[in-house]
Amino acid sequence: MPRPHIEFIQAQAVRWHTLGEDMSRPGAEAKPLSHDADSKAITAILRYPAGWYLEQDHHLDSDEELYVLSGTIVINGVSYEEGNYAYLPAGYPRHTMTSEAGADVMTFFEGPHKRVPGPAPDGFYDTTNLVQRIQTKSAEWGSATDPKVMAPGVKRLGLRKDPDTGDATWLLDIDETGMTGEVNRLETHPVVEEVFILSGEMHMPMGVLKEGAYFWRPPGIPHGPVGTKTGSLGLFRCKGGPLTTDWSEDPHPVQWNAPYEPFLPDTLAGSLLPDYDSTLPY
Image 1 (cartoon, one colour):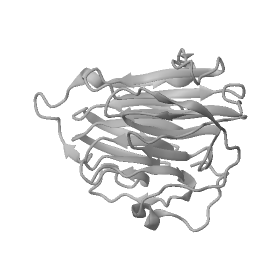
Image 2 (cartoon, rainbow, N blue to C red):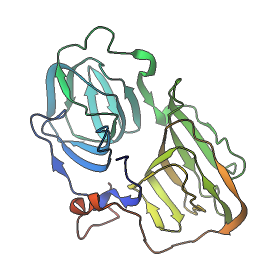
Image 3 (cartoon, rainbow, N blue to C red):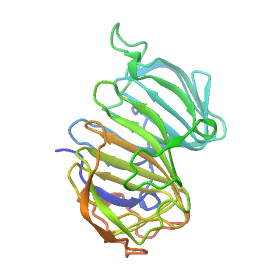
């Protein structure tokens, strides 16, 4: 079955699981947020404890996309610090991975992500989509692209776009003036929209998304309207093609401080903590 609709879960409510020796990152902890039972693709936060290391020439059998939430992880001598982004295609050679002080890393695996010793077979590693590293805190941001919803207080930083599929990843930074209106239009996308809130908050009909909030929204689901009076920074992805938006004809009132009424699959039930502190990071 395709990946289920999740809208939304605070990552703080999801349990950590220690990864075994047969996993791609043995000894690290994982907090799974969504999973595709067919393709084995997964979105998770990986927590590398201080002193973690993996010294083995290997590659993964699927693509890995990462964004460092905190700390530092070093891959093949390249240091990825807080706010750094990378897209490492299947077969990307890995010689050493270390985290001296520990790190929390938002990670997207596009398949089973099995750790395979040695180099990839000839022709397996395609560098077309490789993004070695983007230091987002010093990158040059652009303006948002949709004038129907985005005010001057909204910035966008493109991180990658697949030249064949149109799948993309970007950061969207909304300042405290960007989306403060009392009404806005509903929006619908023809592709998957996946979002993780890095800071600030966003108000939607199913509740207030705070730092650590996550959703996976399948295509064709009307949603919104969205508002924020504090600002928000989010990591966005679209899957299944480029993200375009159909807007409702009529505006709808923004629901400020709506009660939390999520849409969650039964598969998440066993991973949730009965009590959690939403003010803690992730």
